[in-house]
Image (tube, rainbow, N blue to C red; front, side):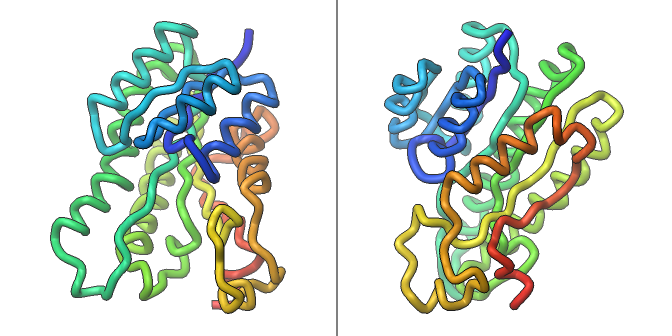
Length: 232
């Protein structure tokens, strides 16, 4: 029986690359993105595709319910999110900060409330949160992302500790600069490897963390950054 994976924000970039990588490795996939682009990716891969946002509890409920209705199981979740506001630390308004909390932290909590009972009943489950290097090396240019992704790292560790003895694992992947973004030369110059990560490289890291080969890895926040953080 094929494993089943949910991937959010899967319409393009890292999310779409992860969906394709998992499908290539035998997973059935259930995808969602706000733009609806995930529907097209799902059609390509023979999976489920929905238009919806991780900030909507109703959309998350629909995604989980639809996945269970079609496949009867959920083995893996890749919790990916969209972009957050940029700005000066104290000039970003309350709405930007609370919106960031809802997108990064509350969405992860809501998703796990929905899928953890499924994992417990099955006796297994694996989750990867897609974060960013700013969680461990915060930058002034994106203070909301840096602050709240650090909180996501803490949640990842807490959840992993809480459910480790239930054979349920959670890790986070922290990419540096990725080729889904048209980075200027000065950004690439900062990276010791002198190139951007490819979305496929991130996707293959995620696929490994969901696999049985990573069965003893949980609660980790893994940088995929070409040694960028080592230089900060």
